[in-house]
Amino acid sequence: RLFRAPSGFLIGDTHISPGVLASLLGRIEEMTNDRINRLLDPADPQNVPVAIGLVREMASIPQGGSSNHPGALKSEEATTVAAQWAMSLVKPFIVVELSLSDQLEALSFHAHLTLALYTKNKTSFIPSQLYHDIMALIKNIYFCIAKQQLLDPKEPFFLCLLGTDRLETLFS
Image (cartoon, rainbow, N blue to C red):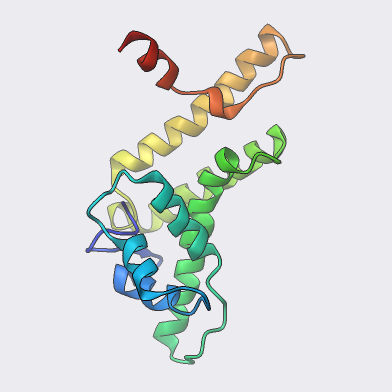
């Protein structure tokens, strides 16, 4: 939702809007205008597969674009930071090859980057509720792992099993 919002967001002193993202996504060879429009369509903000697709595509934007304009270069750098920020939160949940240690490293990176970006731009970067939700999510993951290690350190721990979906399904 953040990347699709018409108002955009701020990374450092660079404003990133859907139009900026669209032009940067257009640099990807196989990217069509139709795909760009679907990825940036704000009509369905809860469409998780599209959101993850957008984050993956942002992470694959070629660096060193055709423009030497300082504004374009700043937008490219800010978009790269935004893609790294988003991917560090998504990656532990979608890349099954990661060890638990690698997942925690990515989440720690995400928490630290979120703190730095939020400290710089406050709600011009992300809404305060999202900031607090992200930090609470990461804190809870670390706490759940610590509890599991105390209960039975030999049992495997899987991030995908955290959450309330199973309870909601059971009691709905």
